[in-house]
Length: 435
Image (cartoon, helix red, strand yellow):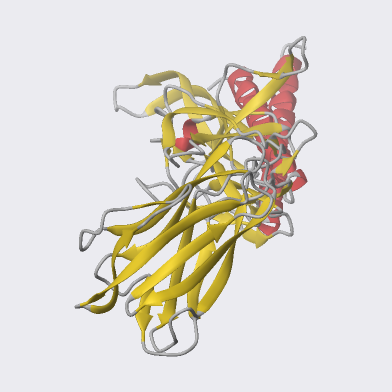
């Protein structure tokens, strides 16, 4: 190797150690950055010229060294609890799928970069537009969930937006009753109970049910709905069987708006009607159990009317109160009427070689041919890591280890400067020979 070759090799060493020092500095600077993955430095030797003598021994060689940055995307950082209920950490392999907002439309709607980004920084919160974004401004993507069927659409990932509109009221359509009519009271005795129902505007009303004993094993049910038009709904006769005793056998003599189901054993025993609270006819069904079974309105021995259960469906309008995320990644909207609705599911995206992803600003990455295709899976399935809610993943940088690397890079840099100095002195000696 010539003196010039030695000098150039040492210069490449200076450049390589400068790159190593740069990686160490970046790692230390981001030792507290959420989701940051440290960058290690490896060195590669490149031979530019080599010749061999007759004895097959090296007689001259020049080369160079290059620094290569190696990512540690598969190395887990520490997971710590967070007071933010929307923050998440991935325990295991995988990334969050995120988008980058790049502007707005004329009507103010957000627009996003066509590229797909991936990150481990899960410190998400709701921005003013309702999107879930992390501290670097990336918007969380997820699968949409049908609010009616609960089906998850796993074909498309899109930005998750929190809709803070009200939960529409649901009119009542069914009243469930579990009670016992006292068999030992006198004919003409009346007992009653009430059920609350909701109209289509979410207002609550009372439905009155009065039972009058007509004869042994026979009662008349009179129903009314104060505030409805008309308020009196009608009456229907309840006939009880002798075998099995105390169970409802049939309906008869229905009047007004009431209609009873046929009395086939083992079928539903229910009374149907229409109630009008000012928004048109509202179908309503009173479920009294099953014909021939003691699972609804029975008639057993006793002198007191006892109600085991009375409930109705429907609900009033609800205002948005909060949003929560489950361990399965379901994003759920909660309302002050006690209702909730899942709107999206957060998947975990994995790659064949995540260390080959291309790093971009803000602890985010882009897919490359070397990383393999992005595979979105539900948490804890198909090799994807699990989600830890109300938690964040910290940087995987070990500061003590980085300072050790710093010392080695500094010493190696100094050694390369000595080689350049020595080569320079030898060149000066060579030049002095001709004087």
